[in-house]
Amino acid sequence: PGERGFTLIELMIVVAIIAILATIAYPSYDEQVRKSRRAAARALLMEAATQQEQYFLNDRTYADDVAGELRVAPTTEGDHYAISVVAGACPITTCYVLRATPQGAQAGDRCGNLELSSRGVKSPTTPADCW
Picture 1 (cartoon, rainbow, N blue to C red):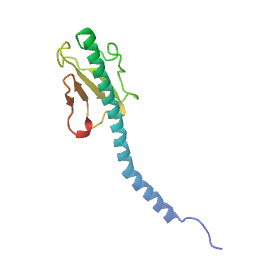
Picture 2 (tube, rainbow, N blue to C red):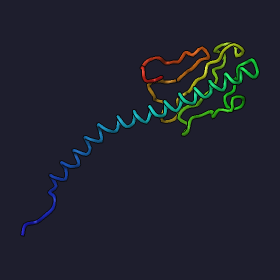
Picture 3 (tube, rainbow, N blue to C red):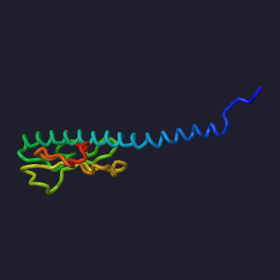
Picture 4 (cartoon, helix red, strand yellow):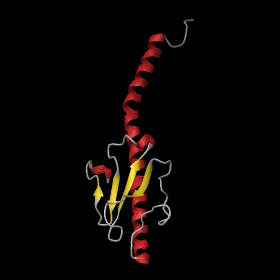
């Protein structure tokens, strides 16, 4: 009748393995979360661009207020990006530039601000997965 159970050494080995796996997995998980938030910001920028074009068809000028005139949410779900029309980027009657600015936990994102212009110019262009 010997004792049954785990020794302290066996338990420490299991804890060390779990710590190593967590160290490897968490940064990958965190980057995937950032990518999904970035995708939500891109989708909201595209929606705002569509509303800008409709606004231009109706009023022969582009809107300078995302929430009021375009009726597009000013932030992504969870407030990770704020969407705005860049003031002074170009004459509002001829073009527009929309910007998604990262906020909160997303503020350290390597892509920084995402921009989309009426001419279809997207920035930043690098790294490739920003757009």
